[in-house]
View 1 (cartoon, rainbow, N blue to C red):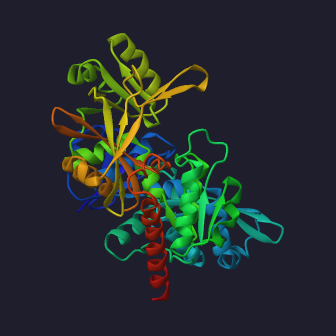
View 2: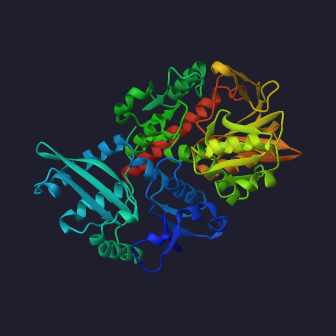
View 3: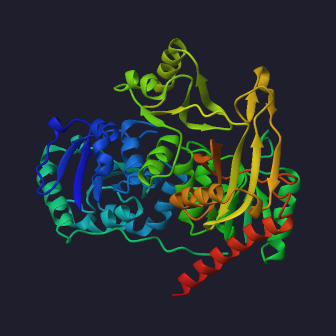
Length: 489
């Protein structure tokens, strides 16, 4: 397996580590040759991992390409969560006080290189922090408050942040790690059991309407859950529950993602899980993943500042430009002229290093296939809004027009559409997904895989009725029971 250190500027790389290739981050993200290199470990040592930065995309695309990134995108997001930081402080409270108790200063920074620290007395603390946030280079900062030390930040750092006096040790730690003698992070042990349904009472277009939420609650009770609706104010109560069902619209830089993170950290079954949210909410990831696994999608180009001149030539106009985190027809634009393309693409690239461009496939409707645990559970047709090319037409002042929807029995829908949707969903995970498929000239194209899909009473449940809700609740129950069995062993 190839080992890659991906850095901002290879010429500034300060360490010489045997059998490791040093690659520029922008080359790794934009050069298609890296897509087909086979198995690889990708150690992401960029300066910044902020949302949609080049460092963010290194880990995102490494996952899509089947490489093994470190840190993973989940780790990057975890270490930015104050709630998980507080949880880590509580778990390691005694060890933190033992390790730092004799220090005279009021602040202390602990540098962790592949799970190790220079000082032996901090070895156990370094290893436990590495287990919580498995990134090759970590930095933890502690502050003394009164008589006790508190962990205030924990996160990955870039290679050029290694002090010169630490470099020899960092090389030693990396060499030991690659020889199989270094520490490996262990998995957190899951725990617990009761169902929380996270909702946003103020949301205008929630994933489930009131009648659907009531049916979820009745279905939960039928399969043995006590269901309770919670809101964003209730994160501190998550440990009271055995499972979390997110029925508020999800996004990465959003409280819904933090709820999913916290639930995962507490050992609670959660749908949507953090990985599904990360993967589904980024169109760049989805495009790379579908390409790698040869699922048909509209002709697609990942756009960056180096290839702007290729887009119109390769895709022709009109074409569709998508912000990576676009949703509900927002952030998705059809451009029909070169001038409009130039203006819009520059605007989108000001917010994200990469965006998606696709050929325009006009259709009267999109197929939506609901998939749970790798199996189809409903099929709908979402029709385009009147005199519009999308399902939803957004107007000034927050108004909108929506096309109609109808639901079909599974055996009445095209079998290829269902097979394609299930294959696409299984690339993301084994959760609950809504896969959008276009049918054009007898072919089926994956448009996107949605986490947290819409399930409204009167629409998606029109064929299956209460069985749709009960099937989802049965899945929750099976997952909770599986976690309980794992805990017992």
